[in-house]
Image (cartoon, rainbow, N blue to C red; front, side):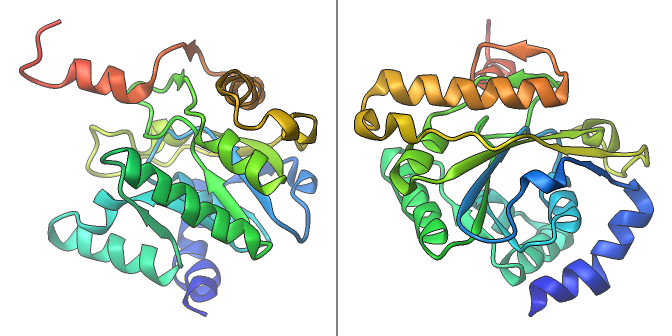
Length: 230
């Protein structure tokens, strides 16, 4: 109930007014059934804007830090995320990653729509980074279609260095579904998981028009951290 109140009464109208989201390819998102939406991640506002334009309810795997941020902004963020049924993901270690996969598969098992950002974190500079194979593991295990998605313009709205947002228009593009049923028999092979993930990221790249970087965004952020010598 709170999800739809946020979408149609509290948050949705405000986001539409501020960011004027334009949506393309919405017909590619099926009206029912388990599906993964895999997209690029440029800004904190990405999941909120995506939820506004989609007709179906969508669940995101949200990093645990969002639920534990300090101050009023952190408290409000956690309230909105929990109320909207988003899943807190602890990214600190292999066991935590497996728990996230299990949570995602539980969403799909119920026939719901699940959103994943394969890059694993927000882009540090607006470019598209290498995808992690968790999206492939989930898609092959659940045997579901993957809808590539690209959000364009949100890095300019609220990049990581800004306190207040800008208000340029935003475009959200959904691509044709990707079917990986051909890979079901080899779903556990690392080379297959890598190939599936790369195919998904290539589809996202075509939709977004970003520059691609064949490195993990998290590694780039670590290298850029203050006090670290290159």
